[in-house]
Image (cartoon, rainbow, N blue to C red; front, side, top):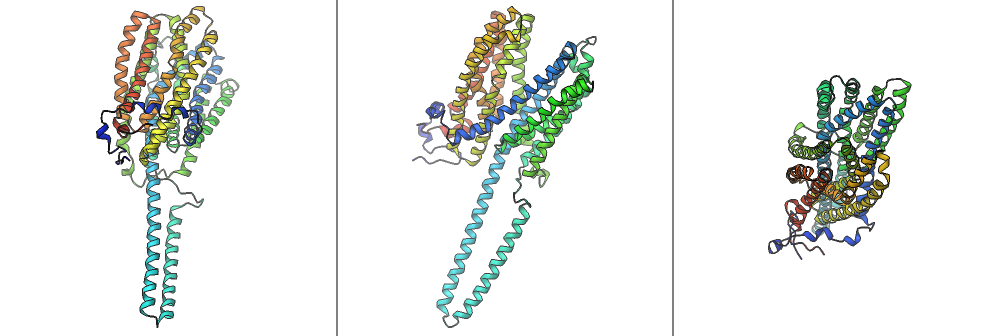
Length: 543
């Protein structure tokens, strides 16, 4: 039997140093549909998370429908403003939420382990004291039989007072640490740090977008004489007032994810967006606020969500750290900087692909935009699995439960592949027969169907790539995740230029397929070679 060291590595690993654990991905693959405890835990986190992620684009779609009734100018103005706002938010949101989930899960697990250890040590100490008392009584009985009764009475009195004292002390200690409702609040410094960063980033984003709205919209292509400029500025500035609420809400969602609770945020998000949908027609049409009403309804819903999540969170977590030293500011900055580089690399690749498609004219651009939205939207379900595996792995690594790390990672990856295959058929049939929904132009529909094989066939690759992101974050492997994707992006940028020039519209999709395949391969390489946090897989039997 192999002996595991503190990193989970086998003592026999040096003998098997050249054996790469590539077969780990096929471990217990026959159980992929089995609803055992690990499957229930994964899906219990993934399903609500996927619904919460899907709620935002659905709400934005309804917003767009209401704004569309105001006229094409307002609709176009809101579209440009929303694109700019979302782009600014994405740069800050993604690193914040990803880091918060991992750090909170890890810290919460360590706190639980330490608490259980203290309780165990206290129980052992109490048992030892009782044993010592009984031994002392037996010795004294043998040594002084004559004064047996007297000494027993004294000992009993002594024991009674000791027990009372111990009971009083324990009761006092318990009363100090447990609130009146009987539930002890968690002390998680990462949660406080995440809220601090969320507030600061939200205020910075709001300030930047409000005061630099005009030049930023100009950079998006709106000229000074454009009829869209004034309504776009009004919408962007009003919507930017909700940036602090957006960042705080997402930071708190990351905290709840770290606790493996994705249901609570889902209820709050659905309630918030329901209010948004109700307020839209009231403010836009009844109050005659027009495009400003749409922005106000969105901002109000975001602050409602932030407030609700904050109230719920303060009941579970002590958000005020004992001292500033407990805040993990530098750890957040270091890993946040790594993920920021990653987000920029991803955004650059997708933006470049859209830019190259636009050079071919409006018809190829319309077809490309439709295919791209379907390509990305259909992968939202994989994000739910990524969140689940991230939370589970962060906890399991903190517990040094490497068996659960292995089982959770492989099962989630297998689930994502099955999901991707299902999405391939759904997207393939849906886009082939439903392409006419997106455009009445015969030429656009024709190009959509040309891009269809790439959009459908890459769904399993996309699902695996997104879940590998969650695997890396759960293992706190942020540096590898950032460096590998920057490298992938550099190679993909080169392929985009070369293939778009030689193959046109099809070449762009070939390059995007290469891009997602390389992203997936980066995840396969890390786990499959047993490097970084996966060193414990080397020399381990995968049967």
